[in-house]
Length: 439
Image (cartoon, rainbow, N blue to C red):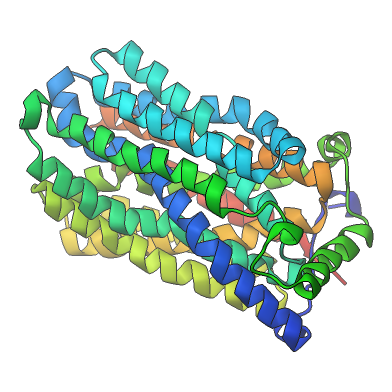
């Protein structure tokens, strides 16, 4: 491989070596921003994937096939793909508060509208619209955090934010199971209709909270002293000014590393979409039938994944190493998915394997996102991060659709799990081959 085909992973000095006062300021910022951003993304994730629980009853009620469900679950990501880059470029122009508030309110409304699905066409349209309105939230937050934290902190900060994937899986499952169990027939609505309505309302309220709570940039944070505001702003500005960071979106589009990152991310996301949309079905297939039990059991892989995600991000920052932290996680995801497919007849083994898969999938995320942030800044970061995320998230369309189609063809979930496992292995292969250590 020639030198031009490599992505150089940042050799970040460990954050522990930072000036103590500045390190204390970063902790203060993290405690202020991260819990709220995690809460928002938990709501987004629940509203995105609750269709996986609705499916347990919705398909019978509406006479939908597994293939219809797979296409509807995945078509969300087509809308997401088309509108993500424009949303992030708009964020760079009008600011994070207005952008994140708009996104949060609209996805709550779109999620509630899902309660009134009656035909496959309406199912596809509303899932597409949910993708359109949610587009830009995740890359918007990744970009927003670059306004506050320099590179040496990003893997751990991204890891803390991305625990929202796992927390949503851990709390979303039991909540969805409880709603599905408790709301059947209330007010002449089915339990899956109540699921969409009751889980959409908090998102609308949270959108208005964004306008009240979220400061635009460090200089707007009233809970920082003027000295702290200056120190944080200068640290980020200095880092963006030095080195060889690309600053315009056109430069980002021409950068082969952006497209390579998008391919790697596509492979990683395929696993996340699989456990998000199919974990309830996998758990039902291995022998659990009660909706609340399915919800509680589905939380186990996500809890383990949360711990792995935080640990991997912190360890990666401490060592300054990105490449193997990401690749090993993807290999673990591959192994877990393969063994889940092999163990569907054995409930305990299948659950262990699914947990291993979740650990690998989720641990790869925070480390991956520290790689593109090392060579993008300004508008290039806004557009480049969104482009990587939007292309990567097309896997959210491909993986559920392929699993649904393969299950319809073979009668088993196993073949679809093997397909996604192969993509996870490809992610590890690309990272090891193309992401080189910075010397």
